[in-house]
Each structure stands twice: as structure tokens, then as C-alpha cells.
Image 1 (tube, helix red, strand yellow):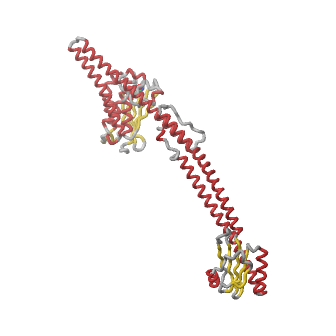
Image 2: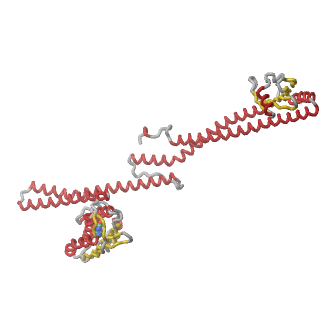
Image 3: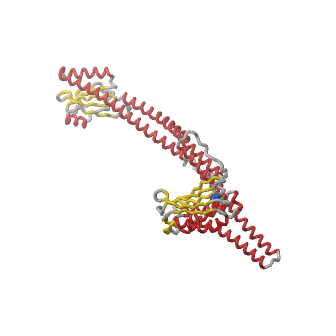
Amino acid sequence: MSSENRPSIRRSFALRLTLWYASIFAISSGLAFLLFYVLIANVIRDRIDRDLLEQVGKFSTLLATDGINAVTRVAVVEAQAAGEKKIFFRLLSRYGSVFFSSNMQYWKDIGVNRDALQTLLERRRPVFDTITLAERKPRVRILYSVIGSGVVLQLGQSMEHYTRFMEAFQNIFVLTMASLIVLAALVGWFMARRALGGVLEVTRTARRISEGALAERVPVNPGGDEIDELAITFNEMLDRIETLIKGTREMGDNMAHDLKSPLTRMRGIAEITITTDSSLAEYRNMAAETIEACDRLLDMINTMLVISKTEAGVGDLMLQELDLARVAEEACDLFQPMAEDKGVALGCHARDCPFKGDIRLIQRMISNLVDNALKHTPRGGTIWISVAPEGPGGVRITVKDTGVGIAEKDLARIFERFYRADPSRSESGAGLGLSLARAVARAHGGDIHVESAPGKGSTFTVALPMGAHL
Ligand code: ADP
């Protein structure tokens, strides 16, 4: 990835995670603080209201027992005792006219709230009012209550404690929130970087690989978390790609090798034709050899095309009902003369197995397996073909020989295109027969397996579903 394509700091996932984390943290802490603030404010206000109601209770009892003069006397004393800047008393008629008050020097801006008075008289329950004075910070909580017939008490108390507490609370809130947001952002950034560290490592490795270091792998921690899973899967994918690249390279080498021989041969023949005077019979021979070499090449190219087409899938198959037993017996008959020439016993045991498939491809698959067995079984050996139903709805075709067998190291690779085990290089063949056999088996929904012991022989088994896949 070029540096321009890399995510900028603004678009980086880690940054977005951090912002999300910090925002969610800030919003939830803010809400918690707000709730706390409202609760505390209510508690303090309730406390003030309770104090005011207590006073009202006291004054109505006093009025009932000792009369209005006692009320005014006590009001003056109470205001002085509590502080004349903290509390005031006013006695009003039901129409709002003031007939007594404690020292109102400090409270002169506070009048009588007619609406509150009206509500009080209508509801016959104490009415609370809160006033904000222009030149003073603390608000004033006022209670209107009837304390006797025709006597209304207007009682006011400064909300100084309340205001001070709320101010302190607000300052703490701002400070705490600011530090919490910074802390949340730092923690969020740290966590996001840690969580995404593994992803960055994968990205870095992918970049180094794209620059050519194919052997690079992502380091895996023993922790086994999701990122390690990603690293393991990524490494497995790289292993697979490396194997595929190696296989393709080897296939290319093998193919070049197989193409080289007939082409060199044809060139040699052409050169002799130009440089020497030969008889017509010799020219004919040379032409025949050229045709043979060309046929080999064409055969190889055609087989490759058939493999590719077959691997492409069921759509390209020409399906028909066929009896696998008959196909196997026909193959046996076909190869019988060759086997006799070579001094190899060839036998077949096939049970009726109706099957839906592409007869040309199935014939080629069986022929390739029998042909291979003949090529690799020395004189005196035996080849046995069998076809039998297997399990519910399956069929098994087996070609077993007592030939040279296949070395362990070749077993896994003989189905690759152009792969030929070393001892077979002297034999005819392009290393495509088993690739075609596997492509045919898979195109019919089955597969092919081999078991072999060097020096003892090999058994190729094709397992097919009896048309259930089609
Ligand atoms: P080819 O026969 O053209 O070489 P195949 O794809 O048919 O190519 O086979 C690949 C390789 O597998 C052969 O080169 C041979 O080494 C090995 N092989 C296949 N069948 C047998 C067998 N029956 N016995 C021993 N080796 C075998």
C-alpha cells in the first residue's frame, strides 16, 4: 500500500474508537453528575421548605394561644436571632396589605406576590415562591400561609447555603468532567491501539509480502485471542498461497520440460532435412516422426483443455444413464492384448451399477488408471479392476496392481498436473492422466484416492455417488 492510501490519523479506526469511548464515557458521567445534582438540589430545597413550614406551624399556634402581639414580638426576636439578612417575617391581611413586618431594610425589594396570595386563598394550603434578586446572588425562598383568621404570614429565607453548595458543585463538576474526559481519551486510545496492534501487524506483514518478502509471517502470541486467530488464519492462507505458487512454478517447469523434448526432436528432424540429402523413404520417415511428435503435443494440449473444462463443473458434462460394470469390462477387453504382450494378468470383476455420468470422461478415467497400472507393473504381475456398489447410493471403482508402487514423497503429488515421479520420466506420458482422472471423479461429485507400497503395488479407488449429485 502506498503511503497516500494509508488511513490518515483523522480516519484511523483507533482514533474513531477513542472518540467513541471518550464520548460515551463523558455522556454517561455527565448524566450521572446531572442526576446527582438534581437529587441534591431537591434535598436542600426540601430542607428549607421544611424549616419554613415548621415556623408557620409555630406562629399559627402562637397566634391561637397568645394573640397577634405575641406573634409580632416573637417574629422580631426570631429575625434578629437568625440574622436579619437571612430571614424576614411579614403579616398581611387576606387582601395583601402589610400590617406588620420584621426589619425589611435588607429585603425592601421584595413585595407581595398577588398570584401566590390568590392561590393560597383558593387552595387553603401554604404556597411556596422563589425569587431571584437582581443585585444579589442567593435566591430567596418565600412561603405564604394563613396562620389565623384573616392573617397571612409571608415568611422569607435566603437560599445562601443552597446557592453556595450548587456553585461549589458546578465547579467540581467542570473540573472532574474535564479530567475524566482526558483520562477516558487516554485509556480509550491505549485500549484501541492495543486491540488494533495485531491488525496493524497483519497489515505490515501483508505490505512486506506485497513488496516481495513471500516468506514473511505474522508473529502469533500464545494468548489465543481473536487477533491471534486472525494472525493464524492469515499465516495459513499465506502457506497455502506459497504452496500454490510453488506448485504452479513446478508445473510450469514440468510443462516446459515436456514440451521441450518433442520440439527439440522436430527441430532436429527439420535441420537434418535441410542439411542432408536423403532418400524419399528417409524423408517420409522423418515426416512420420514429426507427425508423431506433433500428436504428442496435441494430445497433451487437448488433455489439458479437457481437464480445465471438466474442472469447470457439471454444466459442461454430457450426462447419460450408463452401466459402470460394462464400461469397466470394455476397458479390460481393450487393454487385454497389451497386458498379454507384457506378460501381465489383467482381470475384472464388476457388479451392475447404473450410473448417470459423462461416458467419454468415465471411459478416459478408467483407461488412464489401467494404462498407468500396465506401465508400472512388470512381467508376471497382476492388475485387477473392480466395480461395486458402496454404502447407500455410492459406487466404488478400484484399479489394483502388483507393480512398482509409489514412493511416500510422490503420493501426495501424483494428482498434480505434469507431475511425474522420477522413475516414470523414462516412460511415455505427460503427467496429466491422474489429473484428468481426479477432475472427472470430482466433476461427478466423487473423488479419487491412492494407497501404495513401493515394490508391492498400488490401488487407485474412485468413489462416486450414484447420480445423487446430478
Ligand atoms: P503419466 O502416467 O503420464 O506419467 P499420470 O498423471 O497418469 O502421468 O501419473 C503421474 C505419476 O504417478 C506417474 O508418472 C507415475 O510415477 C505415478 N503412477 C501413476 N499410476 C501408477 C501406478 N499404478 N503405479 C506406480 N506409479 C504410478
